Amino acid sequence: MQERPTRLIILVALLLAAALMHLGSVGTTHAATQRRSSQKIFMPAVLQRPPATQDLSITHIGLYQTVQTAANSVSLIAHKPALLRVYAQAQGAATPPVAEVTVYAYQGMTFLGSLTIGPQAVPAQPSTDILSSTFNFDLPHDWLSGNVTLTASVDPVNTVLEVNESNNDHTAQFTFHDVAPLELTIIPINYHDTRTGRLYEDEPHDPISDWLLGAYPVSRVNVTYHLPFNFAGDLRQPGEWERLLRDLSTLAAAEVGSTSATVYYGLLPTTHASGATWFEGGVSGLGWIGQRVSIGLDLGVDTGNSAAHEIGHNFGRRHAPCGNPSSPDPHYPYPNATIGVYGMDTDEDVLLSPGANFDMMSYCGPEWVSDYTYEGLLQDQLARTAPTNDPGEGLLLRAAFDGETAAALPVYRLNGAALPADDSGYSVQLLDERGTVIATHPATLLEAEETGVAARMLVAHAPAPRVAVAEVRFLRDGKMVAERKLISSGLDTRAQTAAATSVAGGLRLTWGQPGVPALVRISADGAQWTTLALDVLGGQMTLTREQLSDGGQIQIVPGDGGPVMTVELLGG
Image 1 (cartoon, rainbow, N blue to C red):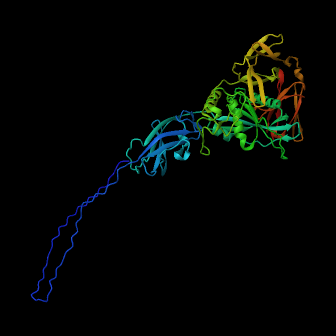
Image 2: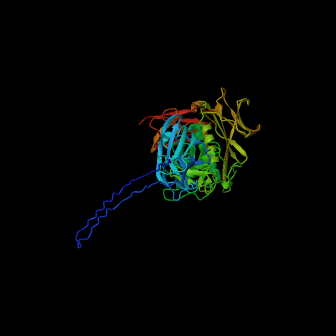
Image 3: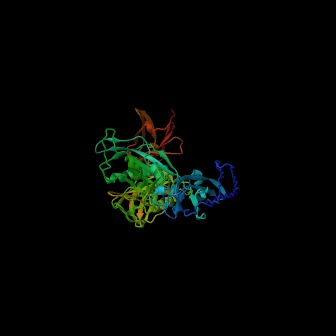
């Protein structure tokens, strides 16, 4: 601060005129009386403030959203909550001085506003690992976009006497990146446990998005609830997890396409209405690496971080090396899968230590996200949400693995975008009735692996050819691994009719060709479809009232090329 000495000089000189009065007496008995007058002399006095010995300064400012390095090198996301830490310090002070810190924000030449904290004590040595040792600001929403310049100033109103005024300010520039919201579709799983006969089901709810919003590089998570998906099996067996994941992958491909940025997450209940549980430990989730479909248990308070792990796989992330996971990422930069740099839970304003928290892609906890994983998630989100061509009508082609052998699954004619080629060496051929190859397309190998369970699946979406397809072949490096004969050429199309009959509690659908697998879906507007069931055999299915929309239509899409059958629903 500027020195402002107060000098008070008072000089008063009073001259004393002594009037001596001598009263004498003629008589010998009269005593002389003498009057004395008092004298006051005012000497010069100088009052001065002591010289300054202390100095205030700002050594650093750090901007945290989820995780941050000392150099502020982690990408910032537009409109995601952010905490600014201002490192103000006092040197040469016997006791910590009290001062304010003000932060000023500019976007180009436009002044966005200012924030002030204090007065409060300025520490001698602010520390990154002690949140209370810094001046901390929750930044306003309108500061969190584009290129922003922040200047922090300690003691801007000059209340503290200092030896140096030039280090009271610190300026840094920050860039906030526009990132599309994370679209999350939660699919409640109605799980019929075939071992006990119990049905495990729950109302649609969201125990996931809060955790994702804190840990992922997005400013918003848009949650929608899918109609419940019915699954019968024994999820104590690893192969059943693979089957359920494969079913939901087909559901997602049929509704939004295999290249969509939307995450489809199957939420599995574990507790029966009676209080019984089927879960005995082991696998708690499974998600494709690089394909946005995953499943996981509803684990109460631990559901969010468990789901974030599986969805991290959907974003292309592999395991971080802690807890002995399968196929760990060899490029993970920090030992024992710690997060490596400081994390921040901005919702609770909790600082997370680099060495005491572990990356969510590991099997260790407590879980958070490292800067390495955070940047990887961001790049995948940017790539997935980039503009693409509108998907056209084509053939959804699938093959399921059983060990090293594969089996081609029913082929459905649906809208969808072609998948990009990968380095797995797989492709798919379409052949006509004479065995001539019509077209060849890349097939994507989907993989998922957690301790105790592994899954693989081949997926391709081929543009619909002009001639009829009679056979599909999956190949690896030119060698056939699976094939499927399509039955469309042998179908009696006159038998392809569907009917709906009201029954207690719902609607019963029946259609021709009961030996042909079918995909059943419903739409209120004929544009946006919700899949109700996959690979249905028997030529019939009963829908509950909860599955039926008010009006619209139901489609039965036969597998392997049969004509689509439509049932119109009456409103009301």
